Image 1: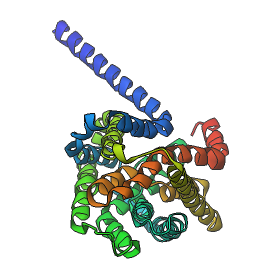
Image 2: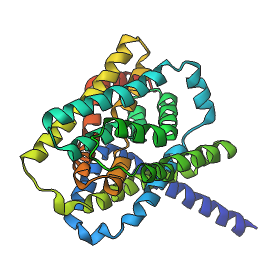
Image 3: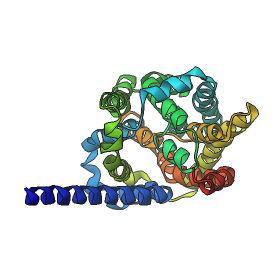
Length: 338
């Protein structure tokens, strides 16, 4: 009997050790987020056709990423946020009305007549809010419940919102597979999100406290793999020239403007600092990996290039925005031990 109890203690100790390893790995990957996504692009360009055949895995990997994020959601969080829906409404307007219009105008100014590229910028602005925005919200002590609620609601609306925005703003000579886009969005983001939320709810948050901890670092590695595989599909069509620099600069302007717009509105309506953090990151960050999948599968080849440059830049810009806008808030909260 003593041997059996000792054996159980050893197994428990081993399990705790594994959990600790996953926790530390996740913390490390969070710190590396600004370089993790550009690394995926580099791997895709270098490996090219050696990994291009893995394309069928992308939707499954992305569904796992979405499911992992959804395991952190609680239905009760939605109820609290929806009592005061103004921040949610403003985030949606910033993300899916003002920013797509800005993308349309900027794209046509910088790349007149190049409809594929303009469509790429519109797609970037039309795609749902990034799950990674919750990571940055957590790092800078924002309102996590607001960010998670907005991610979930935006994800559910994606099959309607994304095709509508793209169809409305895109040039008529771009042929869109709207049905395929909707089906992919359901498979990659909507269904995994619903499964994750319901699984967490019916397990009474036990999945969030146990399984989600193991999924977080794995999902970040899966994101790296998704980006690499998608980039490999167009590796032979990307050439370092001035047009690529222009695309990158346009992406910087569009992305930074999205962050600053939401931040300015949050200051204007005088919400607390935690809500300012959430509104800024939720409005400014897009699920660019999903945009890559859609661009590769349902749009002309040129559409994917602005998306690729967005992948390279988004996390780095997010890190800089957080530092310049919310570093003092983070330091004060950390000093208070909150």
